[in-house]
Every structure is written in structure tokens, then in C-alpha cells.
Length: 465
Image (cartoon, rainbow, N blue to C red):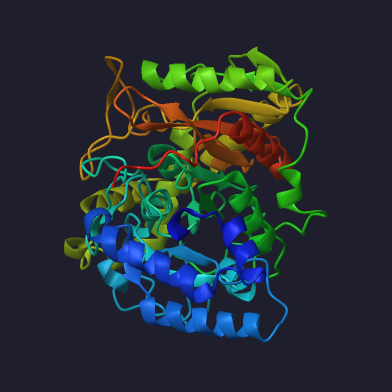
């Protein structure tokens, strides 16, 4: 079935003239027509534009023109990332009619590589929380069980990929927004190193911590996508120069001899015992791959307080001038978050930044001993769509971000981190294992992800929609 082919396969078949871009696009659009009314993964389906781009891509193949690495491959774009000529709302009524004049850098690169943009995927308002719902487009649902959340804020992207509505999705991650939905939807999500993919063309609020990256069904699809979107651009002065070699080739890398640390809880988190067991089992697989695996307690402090202080202040700076007039049309949780940021003093903000620097020094010193750090991606299985995240795990009260304690720390440090499908709990819900690499070691994270995929494949598991 065309909808379940990998992006690598689609691109190869199109180059070999065994599949047309029009066929690939029509298959994805048909799948969207069938499933989106249930899942609400796409908030905008750009069917006419996608068909026109697919026809142009088909002509290029027929004429024997040079083809980009993603020529004819359908892709979706999260609705916080600007797309020229396509409405980009950030999930907000304030921007219901906002049509950007230019593409975000990553979107421009995807188009230049030949990808066909299917439309925009749903998010929380400005990506402010790690579930996917907003006042403009409503609640997105998990393909494995539509009563549950796909996570967020790139939940529409992950739900689309998991249900066969396109092999590739572009997401963003300011505190776990790629990895959390990847874990909840049983797909692969990569938060590249900070700056690996230039970030310009979006909404404010996540300065210093936001990453752009792929959500896919296979590791190699993510690597292929990263090959296209990575590399420096002076419009983003935090962006990293292009590395030599390809990330797709990095997936062939040998992981034998790597020093791998496993922690079920980072020493301070509460974790659902079912999640911990499945992730521990997946982590143990690295022993059979020839890695040296060690159970660790890193001894770090929980950085939730400085993270929350920093982001709340940034959201206050970005959006407080819209209050109180716009309060009635904004998500109440966003209003509360903005108001919280108004209480952060300049001193508290600077002290939070200093605590982040201290935290990085602890992480960096720890990773001098280890190539990779493994842990659960999320502390809990998926919970009810449209409901509040759990405040109790294994009978113990947890903080506001206590259900997602493993993702945002690595936005603060900027390290590459991926969520890899690890297995399923008893009732058939997916669980993700997080693989964290050293600073800028995206290739090592991809190699480890690909090695795990080879020994514990997952892409044949599909939700029964």
C-alpha cells in the first residue's frame, strides 16, 4: 500500500519511474480524506496545491531533469512553521487568516528537494503545551486509540505519520514537542542538535530552546529528511554549519563499543512501572549490539523550575500586549501561562539562565564518560484527549511537568535526542525510549536508533484504524 511506504522507498521508486509523484500524493490525500475526520491531525489540507506540485514533479521525471532527494515525496508541516501562501495559524484565533509571505528555512529546503507539501498539522496554541488541542481547530486524537491524546505539541504531525497520512512530517520541539508525540504514537521523532536545522519563520516564545526536526516511521526517513533541512543559514545566527557526510550514511554506523548509560528516572522522576519495564528491556538490547551498558543515577537536579520560569517570561514578552482584549479567544491554559510570566522579575529570569548554565556543566561532565544516555521518553502512557495531563504517577503526586520530565532538560542543553518506539504496554499503547547524545553528536544518535530498529523493528506495527 502506497500510504505505508517509507520516504526512502517512495523517492527511489519515483527516480526509477516505478511510482509517480501524482500516485504518491493521491494515495496520501485519500488517506487523509478517510482518517482525518476521526483524528483531526491536519488542520489544513492543501489538496489543490499538492496536486499541482505533484504534476510538476511528474513532468520533471518525464523530462529526465535532475531530481532532488525528496522528489515527489509527500510531507506535512506543523502549523507553527511558516508556509508561503498557506495559512499558518499557530493554532490561534488571533492568526486564523495569517498567510505568510515566505517559507520557514526548513520548508524552503524541503520544497527545493522536491517534497510535496500536503498541508498543515495541528498543534497546541503557539505550541505552549505538550498535548494537541486549540480553540481554533479543536482536539487531535491518537491513532492507536482515538479517545486518547497523541501528545504534543507536534501531535498532528505524529498522528498523521502513525496513521499513514504521509511518510514525513516536519515538527518543532521546545520542551519535548517532537519526542512526546512520537512516543505516544509509536513513531520515530528526532530533536536534532540546537541549531542543526536553522529556525526562522515561526511564532515567538521558545527562544534558546526550540528545535526543528522530523517525525517519521523509520530512522532512515528521518536521516534523509535531516540531510535536506540541516546546515547553517545566516538568517539564524545560532545555526550550525553543515557537517561533512550524510546522516543517511550515519545510520550504517557501527555502535559496537559505545558506552551507554541507562536511567529509568534520572534520579528524581516518577515513572509508570509499565513504561519503565518496557524501556529498560529496550535499553538492555544495546548489550547485544556490543555496547557497554551501565545503569546510572546522574545526580542532577530537576531543571523544571528554571525551564518554566524562562519560557513563561518569554511567552509574557511575546503575547502579553494582546491581553486582556484577546483573553476570550485564547486557550485558557495559554492565558494562565502568559500571566505567570508577568510575575517573573528580570533577576529571576537571569538567575534561571544561570541555573541552565550550571545544569549544562553537570550534563557535559557526565557525558565525558558516556556516548549515549537512555531513558523513557515520557513517564506515562497516553492519557485522555482533551483532558489534563496526570498529576499523580504510581500513587505519588507530581509537578506540572512531572509526566514529561525527560524531554525538556535536553532542550535546555541543546543536545540531540530521539524517541524510538520501544514496545507496547498490555493494552496495546506504544511506549518510547529516548536516546540522548553528546553535544552535536546527531550521527551517533541516528546510528544507535538505526541499530535498535534493525534488531527490534517497529514500522510493521500499525494502528487498527
